[in-house]
Amino acid sequence: MGKKIAIYGAGTIGACQATLTSGNGYSTVVIGHSEEGLSRCRNTMLQNWNDLIAQKLATAANRRAAMDLVTITNDVSALRDCDIVFEAVSEDVNIKQRVYSIITEVCGRDIIVVSTTSSIDAAILAEKIENPARFLIAHPFQPVHMLPLVEVVRHTETSEETLNQVCTLLKDLNRQVVMLNRSVPGFLVNRFAQALFRESIYLIEQGITTAADIDRAIKYAVGMRYASIGLLEYYDAVGFELERAIALNVYPDLCDTKSIQKTTLVGIASGRTGQKAGQGLYDWSEKDEDDFRYRKQAPYFEGVRQWHMPE
Image 1 (cartoon, rainbow, N blue to C red):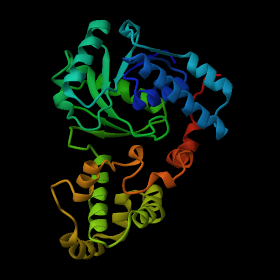
Image 2: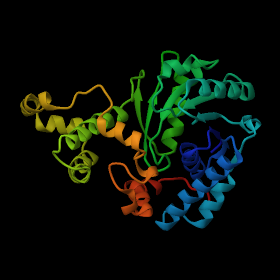
Image 3: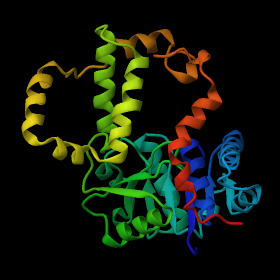
Image 4: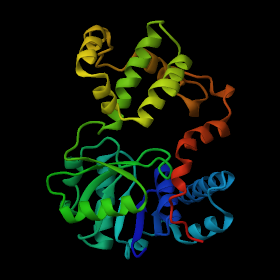
């Protein structure tokens, strides 16, 4: 493959990004902080491989060969020979700036740095790095090694060479790339998601339906429909006249609150904050954790067959 990839950050995103790169034959360095974090990163990667092996998408030999390509360390000098560094640390501008300084100090100012941020403006981050021409955002989605979409966000100083090198790598990793010429809050997918979340919480709070029925509607209509044809292909297929008529009926009744909704605030105050807390919109004690992890990955299994796995 030639290129040596680094991931600065040993959390879930970093571990799954490293699973993807090493699983496609790239020598990969993961920079973490604590020994506990490094161990957790390795265990996450092994769990990713075990899931693939269970689905007969990989073998134990693939797992061994891929893990042999990975260095997981807190020694930043391991960055020295890398060609591209993916930054996957906390969503804190100051922390990211410190990481960019470390990367530049070790690798020089010509190293390509790619942030995986899901929320920070590319122009803001570009101000925090010594050579902004060599910087852009490539925002992946969980689980990062499985879900193929990456939102690439450039800023006014991103060079064409940087853009081309990053997109070439992503496409070699069998990623589907969407391009944003500048940042907007939430980029594309999280903007769509927040609109759906807001409307869903509103409908629950109004007593109109339940979380389970909303999820059923998404899984068996919205998700299936737009997985086979695009959202805007569907809009064109319906036609502007009918869509106008629907919009005139629906737009006035849509939730348009600019505030965090009561369900979320009460959940935070009471500790019922979702899956990790055991309770959120669902009682997670009634759900099978392994089944949920399988269902999160299942739509993407076929894409793994396109990996260039080491043996």
